[in-house]
Length: 376
Image (tube, rainbow, N blue to C red):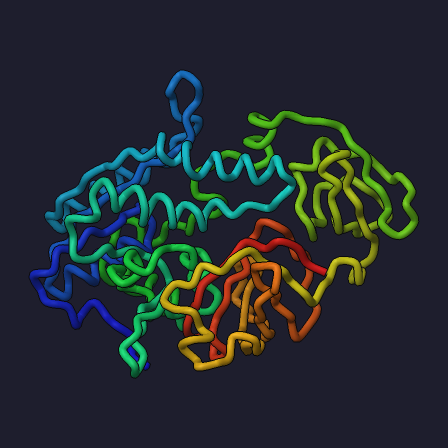
């Protein structure tokens, strides 16, 4: 299996680089220039706006200032692309709909699918040979000539789970100049190149919120509604909450209950009730069977590629949240549609709406992902 690197491309390749103002995309830009390419830089502006059109916070201004300085230093074309409205229509609407239905959404997954490699492709990216980003992922070619999304050698920074919903045509045109490097090496390159943001901290949280607290944002658009917290074991009321939409399965903090720790183990959306279980390792937190919707396969159906009969389980590794750890399991088709993932070990906090991301047993290839339907 071979990792496709940017250095193997023709030097006249037209490359658009998504610049965020962070160190990762900046080092990606630096490496491309050092290799003889002249990428055009694009900053996608998707910051939250108030009703009067003013931005609720201003992290974009600092980002744009840093990207502008880098563009001037390397004499590269820079364009600011305002995708705020399409982001609101596609990603924020998805997030609010999922939260209303009691699900746990993943806006960052949908941002990659619908904005960075969706709306941007429609607006600008289609005229380029490749789109480069600062993601920690790789593109890999198998011996039989298939192209796959590959994991990063830095398991802590690996971002393939955030990319597992993009389309194959999007994926095969992607470049990840830093994807084969550990984070510490990226920082070292930034320092040696004297990049202005070499010491800048990594961004945290959901991509569209900036410095806005997630619960504050949810309250702004969904409000509050007092409901009961019920002890899952005894059925007794043990407290109250401000709305099921502020909580997710497996959550420990923010319940305001004494004598804990307490964990959210179930939600009754219709009656606005949370069920909690107490203990440092309550069994009610865990499950070994995860049911999903239909899988989005990035390259091909792995049953076909591995020549496994469709009625046989497929040995896989997987993640159900962003983590450096992979879990071994078996994936099988459900007669009613969708898939069943049987974990080799109990999994904590299986939340409907999150994505189950599927990898090969060697943890090198990301095959695809699907929204979780339920866990038990």
